[in-house]
Each structure stands twice: as structure tokens, then as C-alpha cells.
Image (cartoon, rainbow, N blue to C red; front, top):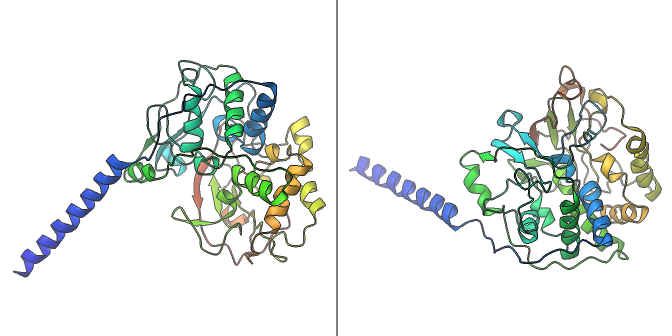
Length: 358
């Protein structure tokens, strides 16, 4: 009798699990048809779109091949927007592809409507209704204003078409089902007021993905109480870097930083944009998009600083380049375009802080 009860209970649990998976599989993603908007490519939009693509949105960080033997992984000339592949061996749940987003009609997005591009950017749904793997930061881009996403699309349409055929992402079960719950329709999104530092700073920090890297996570979920406190480990084939604490904590964060200190930290890398970034070892390896963010205007950086200073201070001592976690050697130039191995939420709260913020 007891055996029959156990069998019955097991079958009930299995049935509930199957129904739950079926619900996720058939119910999600939550999406709407792409809009019929046709974006006019004005000069103002092209300039703003270039700023979003190259600077605050850092789209090229994933969609352009890069040389990580040099500081901050400068993009390879002529490969803007051609896409990259992140194999499962790099720590992902399957093969993740940042696709070719040039206007090439065969291998890129030249055949997509503007509405389909907007839906992919902000909602996380591809042209054919497939869910994009959330390495694409559409959860943050969902906050991108209508005018800014129009500008980004206008700029994407202006890119040089490059033929570069890539495979589709192939995500392993059960992640392939679970990610279907992530997309949400953005709807209409109003612009933010640049004259309000806190409001605009929050907007820029969101589009720029500050929380994505500077908040440690455990199994994909933010660690409670560690918002913006750093400690997320990024393990790659060429180096290991740990995100810094950027809360206003005076001892382990940026609490003692003056506004000018914050500006100077970014502006020191402008020479690398102009002259080319140098070869680096593990102690100089970084995934922080310094080459993009150093091009932010003074007002933009002031707004981001004001926003960060308004956040809750969290004591969390972080060493950004712990020697104990470094690989034996860096890969040579051109050996890999984007060398992620894994992202970890390991606790480094007991390590000594480093003076620089990477």
C-alpha cells in the first residue's frame, strides 16, 4: 500500500512538472507584433544612434570582434557589427551567438523591418519570434526611450553591410525554456530629462548596464544587499577580473571620490581611443568598457556620478585582479575575439581592496 502511495505521489509530481514546463513552453514569451514604424534617418538621430551604439550602449562589445591581448579589448577594424560566437566551452548554457547586425540582407539584418529591430532591442524577441539569450541586455534596453531606440535603429541601418554568416544560438534545456519568461513588451517609453542629474544619471547607468556587472549574482540572481557593491568574477581565457564596488561606501567604494576624480578616471583612457590601447598582462586585463565610456560627455559622467552617490553605501572590500585567480598566460593577439569562460558570484568580500576601479 505504501509503495502505491509513493508511486502515485511521484506520478503527481511528474505530471505537475510536465504541465509547468508545457505552460512555459507554449505560453511564453510574452510579446506583441512589431510596430510598423519606419525610422527617418535624420542627422540628429544618426549622431545619437552612434553614441548609443559605440558609447553608452556599447553594442559593439558583443557584436564586433575584438583583440583582448590589448587593454579593454579594442574592436578589430572593419568588423563593426559582424557578430561573434560564444561556445558552450566558454561557460554558457549552449552556443550563444551575438548575430551579425549589419544591413547585409543575407547574413545580417538588412531584411528586417525597423519595427522588428526595435522589438529585438527592447523586448528580446527575434524577427521569427524566438527569444534572445539575455546576454543581450534587453532587460535594461527595455528602459530605452522611443527616440533613443529610433536613433539606434537609424544608425544600425547606416552601417556598412558585411557578409558574415553565423549559426543561430542553441541553448540547452532547461535554460532554453526558462529564458522564455524574460522578454516583456516595452511599450511606449518617454525620454528622460538631461537637466535632472539623478533622473538622467539613472537612465544612463541603466542603459550602460552598471548593475549587470557591479552587482554580484548567485545562479543568475542578484545577491541581496549587494546592489552595485562589486564582487562579480569574470573568468576568461585571457584574464580574470572582479567588478569593483561603486557604491558610496567611504572605505571600499567611491564614497571618498570627488566628482572630478570620477571624471578623471574615465578621461585618462581617451588617449587609448586616439592612439590605440597597449598590450597588457593579467594585471591590466579588464572587461569594463573604458574605451567606450571614456567618450561620455562631462555632463553625462556628472549625472552618472550623482546617481551612484545617491545609492545605498555597501561595505564590500574587493580586489579587482586577484593573483590567485589568474590564468597561466594571456592568449596572443587575434587568438580569440571575445574570450569569456564563465561568470561567477564567488564571495571575495574578505580580499583586500584595490585602489583602481576596473
